Length: 388
Image 1 (cartoon, rainbow, N blue to C red):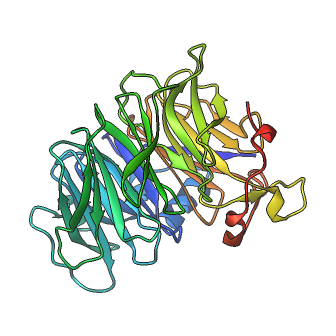
Image 2 (image 1 turned 90 degrees about the vertical axis):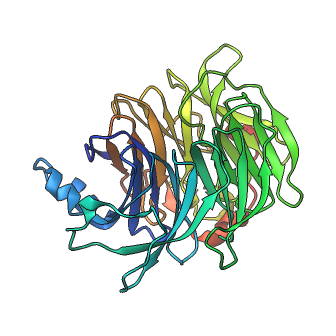
């Protein structure tokens, strides 16, 4: 049985959420111009450990650090390596990359630092802005790290995508290339886990797949995407890079859906249906799962993806199923803006424009049996087994 709790964490719309690769930290960004880093273990204990009402001071006790931009924080992504790097993008047109500092006071990039509200927090961690990236002329809407953590992609409503090299020592980074051929605002980017391709979605109603070796477009389609505007179009690759779940799609009959493409030939693999309004965000769990009804082996592995929509609902799908595992019908009043998973537990976290976080904890076996990383390299089952 799914355990679900909704937390009114702030009075400002929440636009971004991400969990660190070790599962210990949750970062959230809002219209308040502030990034908050939370103790996810403590937050989960508070959320699920008591039947009493959760007080605002209980939630504030989970804040380990708080630092600011000069505009709303629209996107956040932790790097997948062990360096504890967090990238943030903002309405101030900049991208900052923050590093957790162990036991020392950090100097800060001018104009960026700890928010006044965090100064009295005795649990505060120290995070230093080690990169401040300026390449956009308008709001930064999405971010994606390369698999090796040395490059970062940023997408903006200036119709462009910047690819940054962060392997050097300069705090301004190195702009490798600026991809500016989209005809409207770019609102979603995702780096292929295998490092070969890069995907983007824009308000110009297109999905583009770029080849990383030369940054040429190898696939582009405008069908089945709607041109209606939403705040974000956050797409997601499955952990072994064989499938790409995209946002803002519609069936031929005009029904809202998430369209999933297969890497082999960029053919549509399936459509996940049911949301009443546009799909705004998709996010795969970073691990694979074996069906509890099947013998644990590589051939039985599948992936789990969560989908958020303008209808305020979140649906959770497995790639071997025709129907969702669960649908959180009363999750939010307003649009789901971002989704993230704990990499070490069956825990789903979502945030919304109505200033709330939702935590969804699945019982053991509900998603399947969590599999070790070496199982990610195997081929997926044939598309006929899970198409809808």
